[in-house]
Length: 480
Image (cartoon, rainbow, N blue to C red; front, side, top):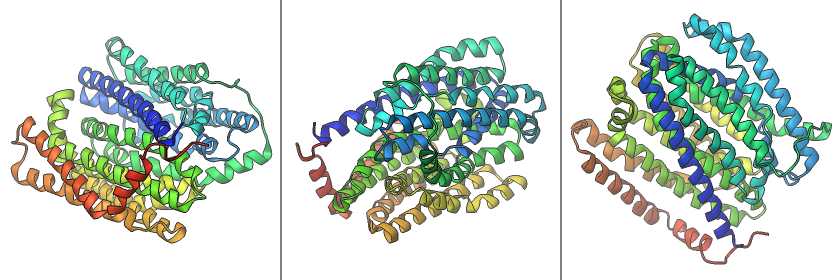
């Protein structure tokens, strides 16, 4: 089978799964947000913060090592990874239970102490995930992994309404998260091709540690990057403002997460198998950067022009406060999309230190955001500060790839500049015209912006045209 068709098929499965899965998550959040008060929705958001923190700060990336490593198909290696995952899950669960009291105090919701203790079930269940769906990605087999992510989302969207009606407060989200983890574990075992087993090989453990220790610290940084702003809002503002902020974050982060997951799953095995051929590697890297820039423009411009209307239509008028900062939040998500390409390129060489240092650059602005929150400044300035940090992180990882691997910075800088100019136009227009344009006019403007960005990119980056013709020429590459 040609690489072209293998990629198109895998990409179709991944994107289809992400679209359906995120649509289910979106509907679930709408149901919960509409039936609960903004205050209860804000309390529910803190559960996700707690689970996310422990997931990120204890992630050694063993699943990615199974894909990246040349001997990732080894059954003993996979069994050792299973044993490690269980130990990690138990440790996370105990830690989260112990820290339930300070968490409830930090967020000024002591009445939710019992809920923070019960949420410790989530990492405990996830420790028993079968890693075979991840291993199958080595040969672009994504069906099992997509099912592991998608089926729990479908179950949750079906359970959301009865759960909220039954519990009638923030505890509905708690039990939905527990249910999601249990279903995910069951599905991962149902779709696995290998028997689930534990093993312990010291040499393989050392490899996992060497690969994963930068990711361990990187996970802590990623928590502050993805959830730090919400922690500031949760600590410095009331739960109602946190509920509104969480709605804006969730609705803008969904397409970013979809793109990041699909791009990571496709690019990591593709770039890893071509890391010995610099010409081929550069070819795929340049093409991926151009595509990511166009997707970033579509996301950012779309939320700048239509974000407030989308929130009002889906979540209701009680979340109208998002209009003050949803545009800047969309810009921050666009920069995150641009960072996916160079980050995965680094990891394809087994380099997990570069993403770590890049994220250090991202949180360099975090003290400023903390000061803004503690002094009660408008939330929009917290978001603007986040945009600055994302840009610093992106420039660092691009510069490092240029100096350490010889990937010309222009591969990323030119498309980045075009993307920035493309979203400047709707941003300026919205600043002066407000939200007075109709759905139709704003949608047409969005299409014009994305189309202009595509034309400008093909003109400014002629090598991209050649790469597209080369990569997608029929029968060009065979998967060996």
